[in-house]
Length: 197
Ligand SMILES: Cc1cc2nc3c(=O)[nH]c(=O)nc-3n(C[C@H](O)[C@H](O)[C@H](O)COP(=O)(O)O)c2cc1C
Image (cartoon, rainbow, N blue to C red):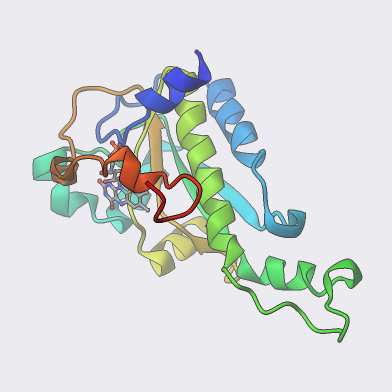
């Protein structure tokens, strides 16, 4: 698929066939998810890939699937795999205390932006685009951080960002938020400075 088509086809999918995707396909998505940039090449991103059906159910329960099943159906549990992107801020601090990153005064930089959140966003985008490229779809639901940590044995220094179900899309209920429409392109992209028209 052309890159442009992959980007344009991506959307938040909220219903999937149960299973039906080979493990190699899931692994290919995970391998592309790894190939994202990171500040100082810190690579604080990880992804837990949940394929086992009973565990997917438990993960979905931790995301409150039961409370929205009447509207959306079991869209978090029924899929081929759940990708749980995780990031460790501590890895970035350790990296930026290495000699090549220390300031002349021997201190770690004052972070202008918490780049760990930036980098895990890139990881998430790769999961979404790689899924589309495989002819699949991907959704996202915010986590109960503590419940996910416990359920999946995620170490304390890693924050699970949410759950991304991946699978063969079937007809779903779109987000009511889409009514908002896209921000006009001219508002989004500011050429040669914010105010130049
Ligand atoms: C950080 C983030 C959090 C989101 N949280 C949820 C969520 O909890 N539940 C959900 O159904 N969709 C969630 N979405 C999906 C958005 O609603 C969706 O991306 C947006 O409405 C635009 O639609 P599209 O992705 O289909 O283009 C989230 C997306 C992002 C990037």
